[in-house]
Image 1: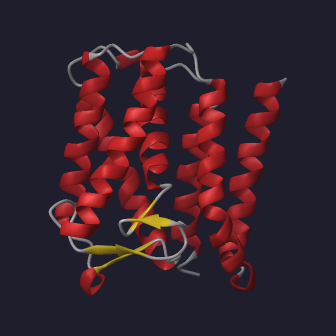
Image 2: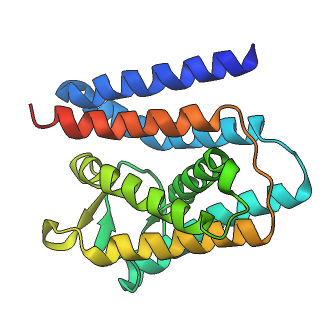
Length: 208
């Protein structure tokens, strides 16, 4: 019953979000809700995560921390991803980096790992996972820019961004494989699916 309630809530949240971001007067309010949505999604993943043990807990925390640190380095030095700055939508910042950005990395890395369970122990799992991350980022970028999440110098998304996304996420997936981390979660699939629907819908609808 809890699973069904959570899955229904996730679907409704993203469908309402699509409408909210497309209706101009409502967009500022939904932008303010964005970081809280990321926090809620992360808490749901942790709540339904199995198995609950120290190893997986440490890995989950580490993924979020690595994601945050990489973004701190990237936005402050341009050595990773390219020349970009964060807007206001993702909320409170530390070192010019939204505190919730690590949760974005966690949600995606964790969710893809759960979905890719059948190939998790194969040598090509990190490559498949990293490719999925790049495709997701490609979908996310236009929406993120349009909704004041972040901006690129000269309004140009560099190829370096996608290369570095592939390398960083590939490293995280490789560590998950090497450490034989067990991630099981009955809501992760619907959460990732609805994120794809959300960004895909906003990309399409923005052209009308």
